[in-house]
Every structure is written in C-alpha cells, then in structure tokens.
Image (cartoon, rainbow, N blue to C red):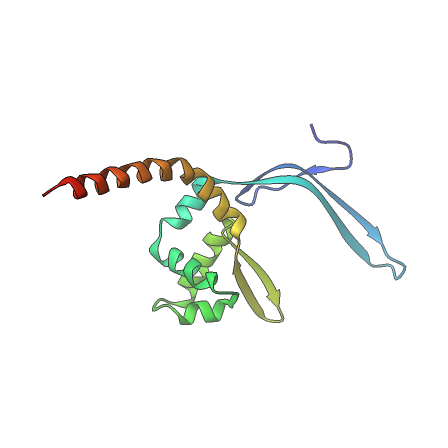
Length: 146
C-alpha cells in the first residue's frame, strides 16, 4: 500500500520497489519546482538485461563505453550502421539499465551503468563454479592423456 501523498514509481523497464514523493512547491519567484524524493531499492529486470546483451552490436557498444563516457555521435562513428540504428541500440541498453544518459547542451552523453552488470554477475556466479569444476576436470584429463 502506498502512503498518502506518495505515488508508486513508474515502470520504465527497471523493476523497483518503493515510492516516490512527487510534490511540487512554489519558490519565492512564483515558479513551480518539482521535488522528487525516492526511497526505493532498484532491481533490474533480468529479462530486459539479457535481451539487451543478446545483440552483438549492443555488447560492442558496452565495450566502447567501458573505456569512458561517449556522446551518441561518438558511439555512432564507431559502427558501420546508421545513426538511427545506433540510437535504437542505445535506447534498448538504457531501458535495460545497462547505460545511463545525461544531456549536456545539445549532446546526449552515455556511460556504462555497472549496477546492472553486477546483477548479471551475481546470477552467473553459480554457473562460474560449474565451469571451474569442468575446466579442472579437462585439465586433469589432458595431463593424464599420453
């Protein structure tokens, strides 16, 4: 149940639990400012994250952003596809929570969001143990073979 004066958080591809205070107030000059207070724990939608990671171009965009922030134009220059296609890939990554975007004048600046990748890492941890054991078995087999 949502407490009085608070509204549930919107669904933007990132699953969240909690509420946000979306109250507005007037400043001394008469303009209205929006005050957003958020008390929530963000949980990334694994389906959206893995769907975004399934595409090779999007994985390459993440590799590019791993080295630092880039404008949408700089990202687009690194690929042999149209700018609108790169924009669609960036939107998909942003909705999955894998990248964050900020606006600086007329530029859209993108950067990697490591929090979403931590979710993927946590999920994969149980499989890492499986593969480590298999690699150990393979190593032992190769060493024992003539």
